[in-house]
Amino acid sequence: MTRTPLVGLPEVEAARKLLAGVVRDTPVEHSRALTDQLGGPVWLKCENLQRAGSYKVRGAYVRIARLEPRERERGVVAASAGNHAQGVALAARLLGATATVFMPVGAPLPKLEATARYGAHIELAGATVDEALLAAGEYAERTGAVLIHPFDHPDVIAGQGTVALEILEQVPDVRTIVAAVGGGGLISGIAAAAKAIRPDIRVVGVQAAGAAAFPLSLKVGRPTRLPALGTIADGIAVGLPGELTFAHVSKLVDDVVTVTEEDISRALLVLLERQKLVVEAAGAAGVAALLAGAVRVETPAVAVLTGGNIDPLLLLRVIEHGLAAAGRFLRFTVRCDDQPGQLARLLNQIAEQKANVVDVAHVRYDPALRLGEVQVALSVETRGPEHSQRLVSALRVSGYEVSFATQY
Image 1 (cartoon, rainbow, N blue to C red):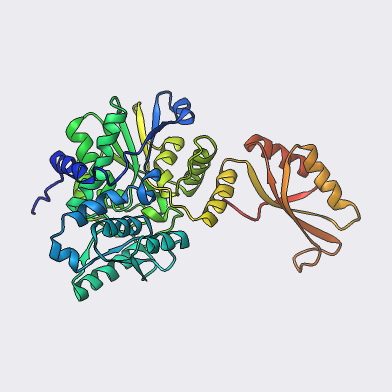
Image 2: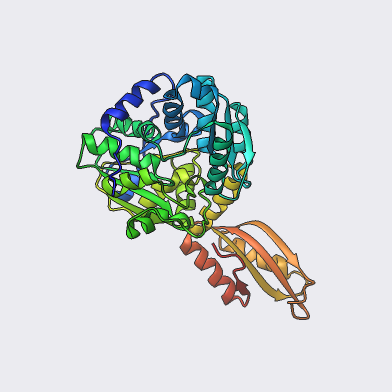
């Protein structure tokens, strides 16, 4: 079996020189919430504030900049759910190359529009990044355009590894670096650079439980495709690790853990409320793992916020989901007798428990209801799980039949 050569520190340092003046040295922000929870300093590496909204421009620029002039003249092609698309589109524009980007049919509209604004031609193909990548590969063979792979190329990995060089300068005593993992380009680059400089640093990758290809692949011992993907974190919804990234992760990364959708939603809420940072679902995966206790952490720790390109409509849903996961938002129905003043009495009881009604729907005509019965559907804000339990208990003690129609 041929051993796959890994990206080394010299390649990452060379990539940083190439990126000078092109990308931002993004800031690190101290997180009091995470520091209090973990008992030691925790910092957030804000790649959500990077040009094009994510770290992806680092690898894309390095890859395109190293093409021969005749290759750039043929144009470049990429596949992405959004962040790599924007990174490639921006890098291609800066370097004078035309770019075609294949995106899944369900890609968020803001990411489609942002990619187009950078000058790329967009093609919609498939339901997942993997299917879009197949279409991009076919396009490259047909037209001669150069495929800019989203993660499985040494130049891309080297570019992403520059994140680690900045972290080591900004937090010199860092002991743990945590970052989201999709195809593995970022975590591979971080591990290649960080381990070369400080072998004692723990590097931990985080995947959404519904798109966790790496734990399965590491168990099997080779890149293994997931049969299905399901997560709000579209930026890391990759069903098959790359050969090169798998080699880096299996050799250099200390652990790859998973987080639930509820964990991600809570993390987004914490980042919004406590850090005043807008981060996409994939970008919050590292913070989700820290909040959920999924990572064995040695502090000081740095969690990489990998991107900030979130669809506003998804953000609305995620905020509600995060509030529900934190026990601060309830959706439930109450059945009661159809009598004058009954709705007012119900709402008054909720007010007495100091809960806030967000919306209410009063249903009198439904085949599922008994004669003389009504159903009231409510969305209610509370102060947390204990407050929610007191509210529901008080309603049931008063004789109301409470049920939860929506499970988070």
